[in-house]
Amino acid sequence: MRPLFAALIHYPVLDRNGRIVTSAITSLDLHDIARSARTYGLRAVYIVHPVAEQREFALRVLDHWRLDYGRLYDSRRREALDLVETVADFDAALAAAEAIAGARPQTICTSANTSGGIGYTQLRERLESADCPPVMLMFGTGFGLAPAVRKCADLELEAVRGPGEYNHLSVRAAAGIILDRLRGR
Amino acid sequence: MRPLFAALIHYPVLDRNGRIVTSAITSLDLHDIARSARTYGLRAVYIVHPVAEQREFALRVLDHWRLDYGRLYDSRRREALDLVETVADFDAALAAAEAIAGARPQTICTSANTSGGIGYTQLRERLESADCPPVMLMFGTGFGLAPAVRKCADLELEAVRGPGEYNHLSVRAAAGIILDRLRGR
Image 1 (spheres, each protein chain N blue to C red):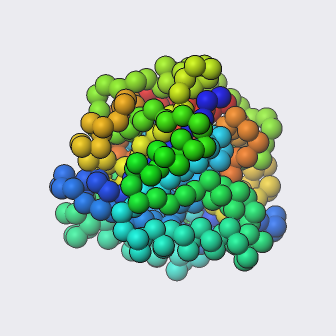
Image 2 (cartoon, chains in turn purple, yellow; image 1 turned 135 degrees about the vertical axis):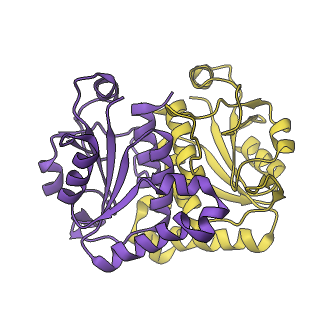
Image 3 (cartoon, rainbow over the protein chains, first blue to last red; image 1 turned 180 degrees about the vertical axis):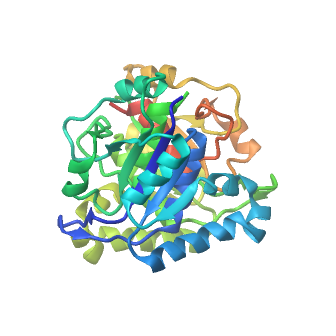
């Protein structure tokens, strides 16, 4: 299995009116995405937020579970949250992943609003082949990644779809589903 | 597609030490599971809680998004939360589903701790065949459904697994992944 990473991006993302905003970090995002990441063998998850106070909030949540009380309460949470790192921008996430994987990851953005993109079977097979570079999946909070971020990604991943047209999954559910499609047994 | 329902059960569930407890309703569970349910074409989601005050809390969350402010803020949330109903016990969920589907649903419990169970491909095919009864998926909060509940279910669903042994997904992620495996495109 090739190294797989994820970044949860809080800026620049869209609000419900399509304006570019910075979203707040949600503590349950950290837990849920960390647990999904650990389940599907990711190497690290980067919480990307430009505001220092928000990164400090995330660190307090992480420290609660990684140290002292939380560690004793539930070691499986610690095991998942150990994968999580906070960074100020996406370049810092890429640099950190490169330090782990030994090569700069290919970036693949996720979106509910794309009609094209690389398919799950194809990406799954690539991730299982020895010559695939490390991969960084990009998840947007709020109402999704801003167009400028999507354009910078090397590839876009096919949208997750159910049988109908409604596809407004939470980022917590979408991340779990995407990782399951790529790495589930 | 045959009618598919889900129940999110707060009692009897296990705590981290395997004791039987009643868990609290989490507002984000309602949102995330409702959005996944709408995406994958479920007919209804039942929030099962024996404590009236907890059901009233859930109703306040639902009403906030279904009426007035929340409705204007984001109609897609309302569309998802319209699927959600609160009930005092699992029998009431079954009766409500029967009233919608015209037949009592087959009950299928989900668990991270089972080594057997019906497979996803098999259940997916059954849900697509005309002679399948309606199906009710049972999700446990806390550390999972109590053994007594699991024993009462007609069937158990195979556990969700990634490439390794760690499989402590949040119920929000697990519900999304399971629905995607059964109904994803």
